[in-house]
Length: 285
Length: 287
View (tube, rainbow over the protein chains, first blue to last red):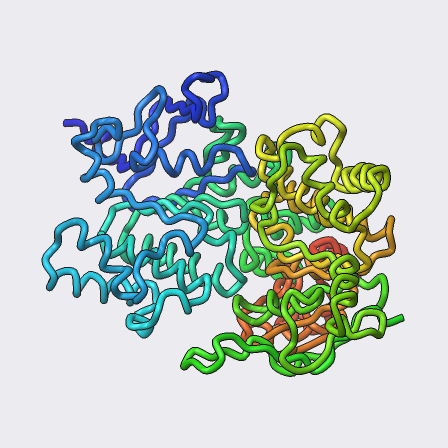
């Protein structure tokens, strides 16, 4: 029984990647190893040019490792025969929603993926409706895609992914171009897919706030995996984060400053609700 | 002194089709010389259309844009003047880099203004200084730079024209926290050194709260609000209704005030929140 390995939906095993094979010293990703389990929510943090997006593209055989292996559900991404089944299991949503919409009507765009998987029309209809409901865009199913807002377009792109029923969606900075409302929409959608559909999520971002509710946070710097742990573990290492162009979430920063100013808050506060609760409780103790 | 005045400006797209959209409806405001104005608004609220009006890339269908009291759309000369005095920097300006070296790319704007070679060279060096570019970087191809450096190079290209009004559309979008901090302080440097008026469009309420003297809130093509940081961010519910939000510190204080109404509501940065909450805790414990 290889039960333990079976659990990993996605596994990076000592993966390196060079964009320029001739110049193999300049690695975009260097010796990176991590795993994503079924139903896990993993956030990857890294500064601009740290190699985060390369990791996204390595995860479903858009890129193949220069050395090392990426496994999806036990299948090697370098194995051409598996490519189709790998992409069925792991989908990627990119930063710019405008680059990912292929059809002029919302429901046609969502149907594009399942159509290409050769699924029956009846089943496609069902999947498209369910996917649009999951992202809260069902009422827009007959709308024209180019008239949607950025957040709406991004949710249609996500619905297109959901309709293919992957086991894992990799989000590559999906909120970088959105307004606060759009960011809330996309974050909530990712969270609900994880919670309600037990879908594994890999969320790549440089908004620290978006990492707070993850099961696991991975920090990438200059192509290397610098740290991997729970949000509490990662965000207690402010110096490490700042040294690689990142930061701690605002609420962590605030809690740190309060502690320095003699307010005895407990350790490990990550978000607004926790800070409110803790502050009120020590105030009244 | 008022440097810029937008008077009852309206503008629409796709006239005569069922998709007609009023991008701007009767927008009026004025900007003082040297002011730093933040512009916030949901996607599609008309922010980008509005800033394109400011140097006549789009012309109002009705209403006027006055620069130093003069309508910028009077004739060719006035348009040309507006283009050199109002520097527009679009979203993701690094996509517009095209020259062989950063120095040449930065020089493009001032060159087109018809300045002497010597003057152009000096301006390039000055602009490079604002964004922290050394000589070595100036001689490199902009395409060999990192994302954050490319962004700075593109913004230097607009700064090199020394516009009286520098307008930036989402200058820090897509940058990591260090990149955001650096670029914001570079914009501050430019403003301090030149006394220029700066207008910044941003989705980051925290950035805007930190730097703006005044905030314009766009909603569905209209100017919904105009006021100081305090005036705007004290209206949390209204902002959320418009698809926006308040700075993280303001949101925290709002929540605490439900239980502690005596807390100071006037908080927009994490530093201020930390100071106020620490002082409040001390007072409470001394009682």
